[in-house]
Image (cartoon, rainbow, N blue to C red; front, side, top):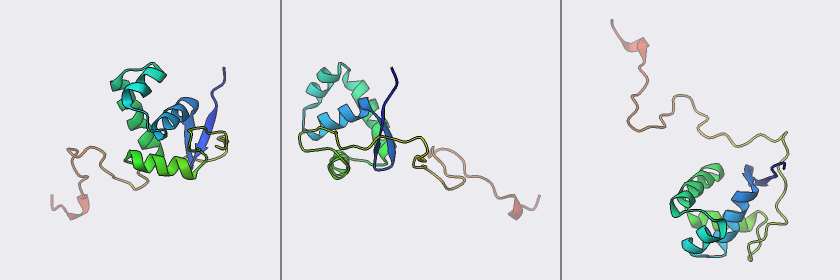
Length: 116
């Protein structure tokens, strides 16, 4: 079975992601979301973190605003959501060079200012 991808505000999301979003925007409790998707609470946390990273958001309120403005209806259906076309480029995160993704990572050394 071929995976269907949707375009939500320039981000490539799957059918499973759409189901998670629709359950979240309908204000379902976490326990009901986990039961509906047949996953554990920890798995839901992981999937939400991945979804937030794809959409470049940080809170559930941002998710609700993004979904309601881009094809999700109030009842959680997403029939108006456009399909992803492969010629589209996904959003690039951390486009700048030398961005430290780990806060403990050392800064790159500038060898031009060293004497030895």
